[in-house]
Length: 134
View 1 (cartoon, rainbow, N blue to C red):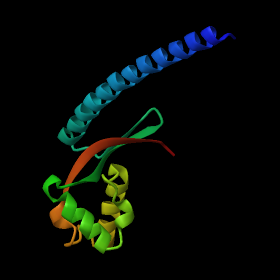
View 2: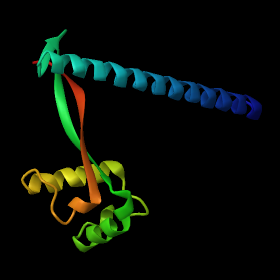
View 3: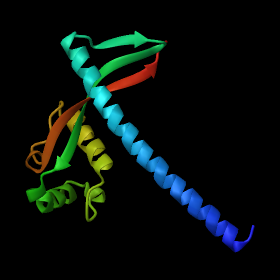
């Protein structure tokens, strides 16, 4: 291929990637909408799980943590003081922070340790998990 053909192919691929990313965004929004409708129906019918076409659908609640914006500097300092400074960059990676807070809660009988409480918001999000039935 010539340089111009390669350039054209690269442009086509980047354009296609952009189209696919937009499609993924639309599909993710639809998934969120349908998942919320299914959660509502399952809660209304008081169903924790059900099987359909070889898959088990079940309600799942996971805690998600985020730093309290006004207390980020203090949080960063507390993390460092308590041996968790490796989580601290200019920002905290959300997935790493969620995993860290979940670990701390597991080690503290399901509660956020007192030294961490003032610096995080905890909220739970219901989702639908899908796994292959046995």
